[in-house]
Length: 142
Image (cartoon, rainbow, N blue to C red; front, side, top):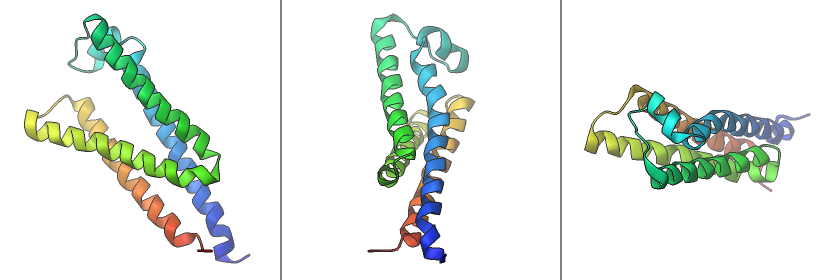
């Protein structure tokens, strides 16, 4: 078997791993935002959730994150969806990182946990870009 014949399979496996990693990382974060925001968030962040409006905003964020997670989980096993799903994961991660960087510049440092989130988002975004670039080089054009 030639190298080109195995490349799409390798790329697909790499994208699947990346997407499943995103699912494993984002799911608990999503759940921490929305299951019981008034009790969970103050334990980890300098946030006090008071009232239905704030709770609803955090639950909407949870479901937005979980919507992305469902897409990534399904796409991990659908090779024709993998490339768009990895691209969406890259946009997701880097847009969150950009928001945190803007906040760092405008508002100053936040909690250590949010610094860790920023590092993970940057790493995930750039890793996803590398995977997309690798896939572009490895998949033969038809």
